[in-house]
Length: 233
Image (cartoon, rainbow, N blue to C red; front, side, top):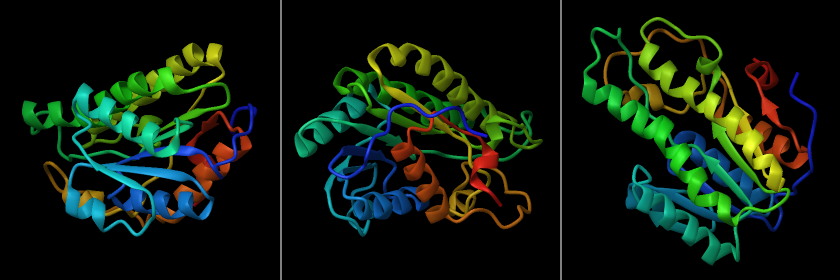
């Protein structure tokens, strides 16, 4: 079961920064956040894909793999929403193959996108967050149990989980919640865009909407942790 709840935070009227808004999970989040009345700022690298997201809100095409990109995203959310209350990081890449097969370039990209982005984005956002506000990172079930052929990818996500655990202790002084979500394999289409290798035959995964709804429910309920079993089958 998830950890005990903290302060509740309604999404309605909250200024929400959604990173990775153009991806499969990001689009599901955008729809759900709009339904719940968020003041939404959507961020992705590709302007055309970002423009195609069927949700209302501010849009910023920027590369979050740089400190300046993260600072620009936070500034855009502050301008659009009159502040910043919630950061949801749905950015991610994947690669398959043994450690011996993966190139250093691929491993660097895995950690730059999956690990460095959430760290840099949190660092840029924290000065604007106040008591009851929240940061959501999605480390995924791979952070709980490593799989062969996904060692480097799993390590990049396990690092996020470790970061979230420590950041939660740091941020609690200001009353800011850090929610680490670990859903199982989700049908976002990400595996078809792997940086390297071919995906194994996964069983049918969770639907993006199911994951987005569960995480948004957790935000509003004050949940502090979302392990894989909290997402059901």
